[in-house]
Length: 295
Ligand code: GUN
Image (cartoon, rainbow, N blue to C red):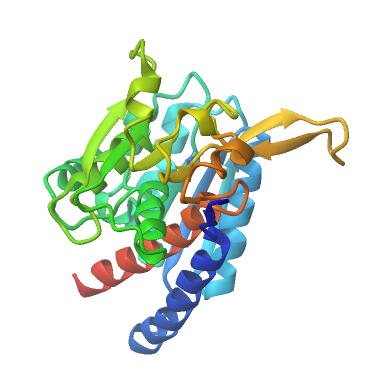
């Protein structure tokens, strides 16, 4: 039987509606909207599209947002100086530096220059540390979106073997840390596998919940899955497709067709995890604005 489709677009639109309502209340109480600042460096087509989509989403929910764009050749000091200004700006509650950054810029230093209270990406070591030890914090958007997808579609990870494929700082590490916490909506038995494993398939075959986040198009297929597994595909990969209008199409890390014959539930790409990332960014920004307004 084909797997149930986990509709990220639909779940994200529910969250966006909730954020819109809560933003109205926030503005009524404080007299100003939550504000989010984007920093976009260079002309990576993916990054440009993501920042545009995120800016549009801010408008939709009633946030104030600003986007600063810099050429590929910008130096680190210019970016850090701008972040210092944004850290002190009372109309800005969230700062998002779109990654990746060009080679001449040290990403960790840039992230550490962001006020942790405004770190709506949840990438600052202060917030990462709080996440790891189970304290409330701003959490990375894609991993928080993965957890929300599981909860809202009725797949509680508690007691389940969750296998995370990939160990990036943006997805793999934080999603593993979120899902292993002794907390509602988590409490999973989490294994993280990565390119260091010679027998990746042995781990994948034991997953009750598989989170594919290694960034390799279609590299997990139905034959590798435990029957009835829940599959969350975080991959967003461009593959050439001469029949497509722009010459490519977007696919996940999982071969959807074969996997949906074996899994009990699966996220599509596009329309699965992607929309959740934006919804969680909006939620984080509102959370940051509330904390800052209270302080
Ligand atoms: N690049 C890819 N994903 C992300 C993300 O979630 N946040 C930022 N800032 N950059 C990214």
